[in-house]
Length: 283
Picture 1 (spheres, one colour):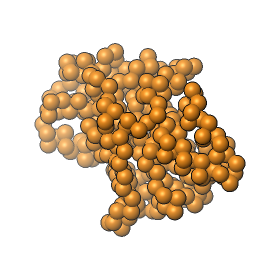
Picture 2 (cartoon, helix red, strand yellow):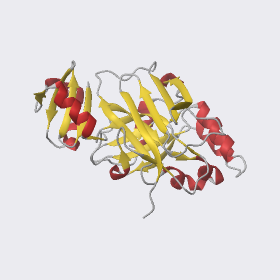
Picture 3 (tube, one colour):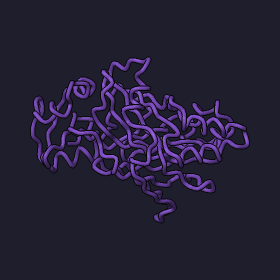
């Protein structure tokens, strides 16, 4: 089943029917055994397909309320190679090689909730960067007890020129206004998501496709539960957290995003996350 957050309430798609709940999103998603609770439809009211479609078209929010967004890096071989390439001149390439094989994964803070954009809203690229890329990532919703309860699509917008200049610049390369998109929903399943799940990305410019690629989740070196456990090892998240799990789809080194590009990320079973690319307007 799919749980959406809108300005009018929490919208649930269950067995091809639609239901709405006007309660607090944080409280809803942190219930024990979320799949079973949502299946009961307790607290939800039935609505028509046209009403649901109107909410999804005009009132959609990211599937989070008070949750921080974190991210894992270098979880796929292609990501390791790309990070090594971008950092070789600064002498930082070996860091990425080492973290790929280390027991401890790379985890970093990505965004506070108010900087996250939903499906069909604009993401930003930095004006002080010469090399900007999207990173399509399976994103976990982990509840306040550390249990993975749902899955979404994340776009980890990144400045590769800033990160490549010095690994210590990672926060500036990753965390800035509208640098994270998540959506369109939380996929809530009774069983963990399949390793055969496809993750694909298409980038469009002036109506033409300038990049496309697809990978399987099975190409990830680390497990989802491993990443979640490291994030929660010494931190508490009273509302739960979202964790982007890394990417294997990296455009070639001669590619950089431009204004008005569109990024479309699709993950089997979840849907499509689409965002237009802009520079942040001047104040």
